[in-house]
Figure 1 (cartoon, rainbow, N blue to C red):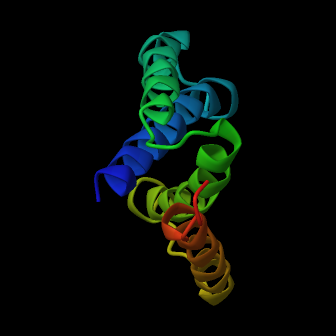
Figure 2 (cartoon, rainbow, N blue to C red):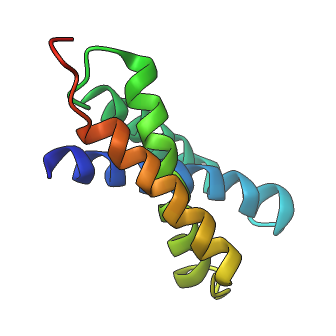
Length: 109
């Protein structure tokens, strides 16, 4: 479960950091939004290196599914737009794939 929590931390940090840029460039917010945004992106990078994986590519691939789930939760809670059935179906497919990557037996690898 620590792996999932670390992936979630990374996802929230990445989305928050990217949203700071979105807010500045698309929502006409102050450039000061970039200060916590860049700190959040640094936290994202740090968190992703804490994943228990021998291979960066595998950690990043599994992260993709968790990122998609977290992005849609962000869309719902922060932006006020509820995911539709296609968002939900796509998320289920992606998270299922991520869980296979995270928890799949490696057979001695």
